[in-house]
Structures are given as C-alpha cells and as structure tokens.
Length: 215
Image 1 (cartoon, rainbow, N blue to C red):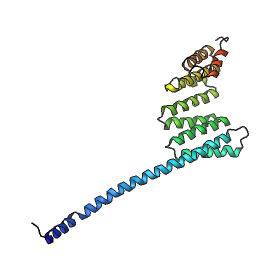
Image 2 (cartoon, helix red, strand yellow):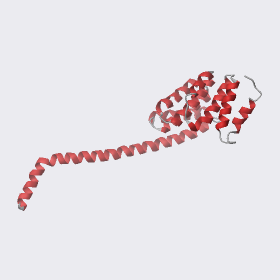
Image 3 (cartoon, rainbow, N blue to C red):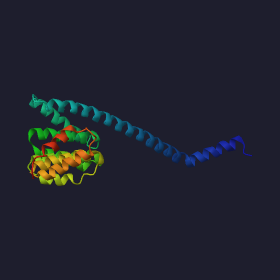
Image 4 (tube, rainbow, N blue to C red):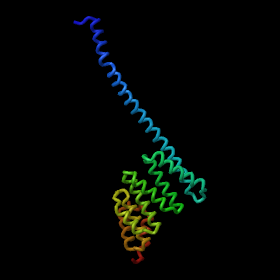
C-alpha cells in the first residue's frame, strides 16, 4: 500500500504529464458552452430587434397607405422595410417586410420594383403559405402590368389547400380581366363550391354577376 508521500508524488507526476491537456480540454469545453450561450443570446436579441422593427413597419405602412399619406411617411415605411431586409434578412419578419414593401411599390405604380420584392420572398422562403401569398400577389402585379394570361399560369402551380378558394377566386378575376367570361365563371363556381356556406358573399356576387354574360 502506498504511503501518503508516494500518493502525493504520484499525483504530482500525473499532473505534470496530463495537467496541460486537462486544462485545455476544460477550457475548450467552457468555450463551447459559453460560446453557445452567447450565440443563443445574440439570436434572441436579434429576433427581438427584428420584431420591434417589424411592428414599427406595420404602423408605418398603415400611415403610408392612407389617402392623406405624406411623402415623408411613405419614405419612412420604405426605409424600415429595406432596413428589415438588410439587417435581418434571414428572419420571417424580413419576408413579411418585403411583402409590405411590394405593396408600397404597387401603390406608387412601380410594378417592377414590387415584383423584385416578391421574387426575393419566393427565393428566401421555404414556407408554403408564405410562398402562396407572395405568388398570388405577384400574379396580381403581373395582371396590373397587362399580362393576365401569364399571371393565371403562375397560379396553376399553387397547391396550398388552405388557399384553394382564394386562388380560384383570383383566377376568376384574372380570367374576367382577360375577357374569358366562361373560364371566369368556372373559376368562381369552383371557389363557391369549396368556400364555407355563406362565408364569401362577395364571391357569390361575382358569380351571380356573370349569370347573364356570354363568353
């Protein structure tokens, strides 16, 4: 059995051989732990800041979209939308911000800029609902630019079940714009059939308005 002195000497020798590597291992482990916590904290702060900027954008867009909106209010809304995308481009807030930005461009009649914003959303988002919303808005912009046929083709690729009624109704609007009354009637009828009973009165009015129209 080792004496106390031998045990102490053995411990000293072990520490001499393994102490540095042990300290390094502990230091690396602590660095990983603290680094991970710091990263999580930074992510939390970034998400909070993005959320605050998004709320400011929502308010700014409401003001900028009003009939009595000033140029300064429109500029503020556009600046917030751009800042949200530039600083927090990997967040859902930025993609919602780009949708708002597209709306502001449409209000100004700058359809090309609106399409650029919507295309950015489609390129960045993997969410089917977000992509459906962006695609529908893109179709409306394309129709406003006089390309209803291409806009309708764009809608054909949408498969999100929760938007089936809205997509069919929009197709009806675009077919009507293109002068294809029969196809518009068919699209509206499809939308009415899928819609909740009495849930879309305006849609029913659209369909009824075509009852006496020919192709």
